[in-house]
Each structure stands twice: as C-alpha cells, then as structure tokens.
Length: 476
Image (cartoon, rainbow, N blue to C red):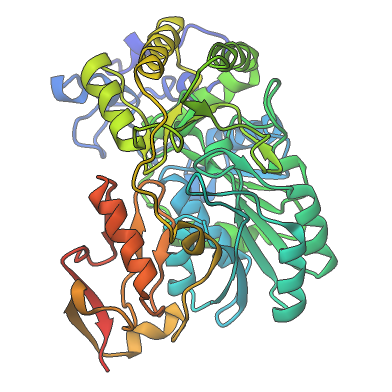
C-alpha cells in the first residue's frame, strides 16, 4: 500500500543517523501522536520527526534497535562505558544516578553548591546529607573548587559510599576531579559528577572532562552549550562500579515513558556534530577573551582566580571594583545593546558562549562591553559584609530533609522566621543551589543575604513559592 506520509521525507544521505533511520519508517499512522506527522503551522515542522514506539522506532527504556545503536555511538564519542539519552534534562539523570548508587538511609556527601535536583533526590530517596563546602571567593560572591582533602576528611568521618559534586559550576569553576575520584575509590565510594554545564569538555580546545578523569557517573546537558534542543542531556556510566541495570530501572522511574523522538533525534545529531570537533568554537572563545584583556574596570574571571581549573567558555564579568552591579551591567547590555546575558548577580554577570555563536555575536558583545567599561569608574557599591560567611559556613541543621514529611508545618511572615526551622528550600535561580535547605535553621545573616539579593533584582524563590513574603516553617 502506498502513501505519502513519509516518502517525501526519505533520507537521501548514507549516514546512519537517528533522523535518517526514523525517516525510513513507512506506514499509515493509526497510532499516537495525534498530528499523524502532518504539517500544522504551530508545530513548525517538528511533526515530521515526532514518532512513538512502533515497529522500527525502538523503545528508549528497552532499546534494542536504532536507539540502542545511537546510544552506543554516543558512548564511543564521549569515551565512556555506556550512555543513556535523557529527554527530561540533567535533572532526570541526577535523580536516577543517585538512586542507582545509593540505598535509603545512606549517608551521601554533597558539594553545597549542587543544583536543587540533587537536594530533591536526597529528600525523595531518604538519604542523609553531609555537605562539602567548596572554597569560597567572597569578594566575587561565588564558590571556588572543591578541595580533595575536604572530601577525604568527610569520607573518613561518615563512611559515605556516594559523593556528588558539580564541576564545572554555573560560573565555570572546575574541581580536581582526578584526585577526588582517587580519594573516593580509596574509601570505596562512587563519584557522581554533575557536569551539566560541561558537555563540551574533553573535546579539543577545552579542559578535560570528568568522564575520563575517574568519575563513575557523569551527567551532561547537551542543550546548555552544544547545538541540541532544550531538555536534552546524556547520562554516562564511566566505570564498572555502577550497576547499569539498577540505573536503567531508575531511569524508567524518573524519565517519561513517552520520550520525544524530536528530542532524541536532536541528541543524536548533536553527538555527531561534536564528533567532528569543537576546535573552531574553542579558538573563537580564546580570541574573544584576549580582546577583553585590556578592560580597565570590568574583568573576566579566569583560572588564576584561586580555582583548580576553569571552563573558558563561560564569560564571567566581574564588577566588584566598579560602580555597577551585575544586575545593572546586564540591564545596560539588554536595554542599550540588545544583548541578553545568561544571568546576573550582585558583583558578576555571566555571558555563556556556545557552539552556535557567530562572529557577529562576538563582535557585538565585544563592542558593547568595551563601551560600558569606558563609561564606568571605580566605585564602592553597598558591600555585603556577610557574603563571606554565607559562602563559607553552613547553617545549623535541625532535621534531615527526608524527615520533614512527618513534621507539622505552618506559614510565618519572613520578618519572624529567624531561628525557625525552614520547611522549604530557598535558592537564587539561576543557578539553583539552595541557600537554605529544608530542616535548617534560618539565621539573621542568611536572611539578610537573601533580602540583599532580592533588593538587587536577583530572582529568589522557595519550594512552595512563598518566599519572600512568607516561609513554611516547622511548628514549634
């Protein structure tokens, strides 16, 4: 029986990409999805690749055909034991990976600057967190690298069998993953590295990836820096210490049972793009950073700023010594020059480069930043004297997050929450690392810090969306 549903989209290339394989599927679609691969204006052409699990398209959660081949190819490109496609972002991979490497009630070592999804995993899986405080760079208001000695000390103290760190961080800071991995393995612990912001690491021109430095599990968000659609990521198994069957079981729990073939085709295409090399992007970033070397007041954060290593693709503009805040700097770029940054905080702002950048984009950013730099002056903004203590000290813990469901909760005005036990996580987003975690006591300095972020225009939120007006707290 002939039909015209897919014939006009047959792949004419000899490549064995997922897109080409999907376009070979040739049947009248009396199955989901409801658009039937027809053109609808609002779908912008995506319907042509939006399949479901039918004969010839494989099944992500029991891959034996084209998806299995695509994931094995990704594992080869990223130099790991096994790779799994994620269509629910790195968040899904973090939840599944932590479950695969732990059991309820286990102690887990977590870098305090980890993404909120790590904290959600801790609560859902009934784990007992011990926090590793990264080195802090207080004058800039950001975290530095995780020290291997701190990891070893806490492993000796807790006997934890799972360690989770973020490297690179949202700001591009890289930790000594190789030494940390050696420490973890000496103590019989698995190392999980949230490398969501570093999918490009390990390719020519960039720093080495945790995937090849000894980490056991690594998650990469493709969409953050590489040419892939939002929500796409990869979860890598890098060693035999990880039970892949338990990992797959965990992914089936946390990842949708109806994965988007549009997103999976995007993942496969991105992997094939990266396979051909990222040297041009790396060189263009080097040239751009060199062009900013003569800035007078605005500086770029780099590996010399007391960190183990640094991801050069992140342009972190430091404004601590001039009379602009990070928020004001970002606003000027947006309103006067039509440039939108990734994020801005009190004393810095981040411009993320990516594989899709163009020469015109770099020229526009260079011209705008240099113009702003020539118009500012040395100035002392209202400084946060508490900033160093916020970054270097942990609040007191009254309960573990997994104990919170058994406690009675009430809502209190934020004017009256000092000394109370928070029943919500509170974070600035981005990047999403909690300032206060459920079960911790809200202290005066931490509340003042959060209020200062709000006053500066930084987005601050909480789990139940009550902050800053109210906060869910444990009843006395």
